[in-house]
Image (cartoon, rainbow, N blue to C red):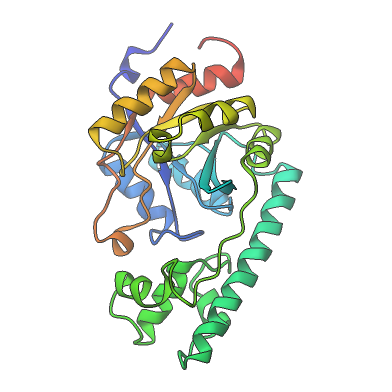
Length: 284
């Protein structure tokens, strides 16, 4: 029998922490979640699950369910595809080995970007920027923070505009895998695979059929970048293709965006229940 008290409960299943490219500490995320009355959260750091031990403990302390998540970077032809994984086993050997490889490539990318910055007299080091990251893995927000601390930028936005945007001469393209491999990796670690913020489906809905054929489980039907028209479109695409629904704020922290997104974009907790139903193979 369904618990009717869950009907109005909400969740945010797309949040980033300092362990990847967010600026909030895990404790800050759970405090904001508590303030907003969330039933569940998922911290979906990019190619990283290092937040898990801390998040599990915070989940107990705050009484908020932690849905194990990750966001894997992939691409297909000209599309930059991000695949969200939910309810994954963070101790899965294949997952751990794959994420370790991704981390090594990410480290090399950061070192190359720093070398390019150094050639133009911007005096920062990898060792300094690695101290900012809890796990020593460097992403662009960590570079932005150090550039601010060293006086080369006055804000996160300024650091990205001057040095770190994708058109900058200091930018090195991010390592990505193909979406089929991303979906397979999520499934082999016991999770469900969702397509994140797929605004490109407005022009190319055929791409969705390819991803479904590769085992995609669901779509992110709520996101901070969607307008009303796309909300209707993506919801219909999920229904028409019998896909699960997920979503959230994609919050990276107030300092990075200038505003806090957590609390503004949520999904019904029933979406989480639907995920559990699929994983269990039975109705709850």
